Length: 351
Image (cartoon, rainbow, N blue to C red; front, side, top):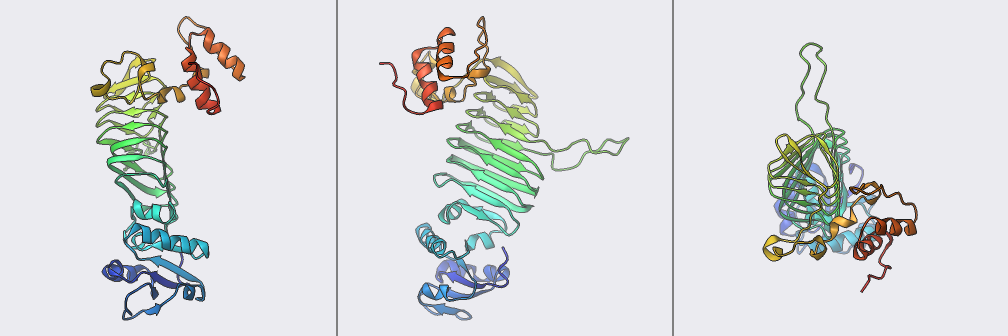
């Protein structure tokens, strides 16, 4: 963000602005103030928003605390194609308040080229730090955070992505240069989970002096359950519908539909699916079909499954898929769920 040749306007001259004038002036030269109950010493007062349009190359700093007021100012700036940002983005030292990111439209690129994008319905305490990163990318979907999601990106071109429908109690995630942490959709993440994409420091072979700990990515599939206090390190890959047990530690690659546990983690059960239904409310349920949460089926890799004592299903058309499922013992309800989730809500469920 280069504002050296722009005329800077503070949209708001109330308490929030007054409390942060000194910090703002350290990073940007504000000349005008719009929306203030009184003239402020050292600034030129604008009575109407139209006066901003008459300035040569204006840039607006939204210096308001109330989210609805911030949204109103951002809409006006977008309408007239005036570049803008929120004051917190300038004074937060690379630490961002998600309510203001969402208020200005859910997208922001900071002065170091780090791009932040967050879904309008994302909820909870989400903390993002970019002060040690350049040209990074953070994308957060429609997620729910109960306690805290802390994301820190560092170095050159780090990437973090979090899919829709994922629920989190508490997570600490760190991504370093050229690294990626990618979390799929509909995951359930417990408390005190750590995602550490790199070792943070360098390790070399003593004889050759060559580096041996190059960073590796962390990739978590869809509908994955991460248990409390587990830790995923660089190189970890967890397939769809799998479960990582409490306090497990791994940098390994694991397929879909498995449970892994231990330190280092290993597979302790294959061929599983899981549901979000809470045991305290559903302890009598003995069959997956009775669960309220049927999310696992949406992400099941049907074309790759090889049911025991059955030949592999190879399908290309919808008709072949249905025939294959019948031949391999799938119920009408399971087939209906699959078709609805893959092809849209047009398939009538059997009554």
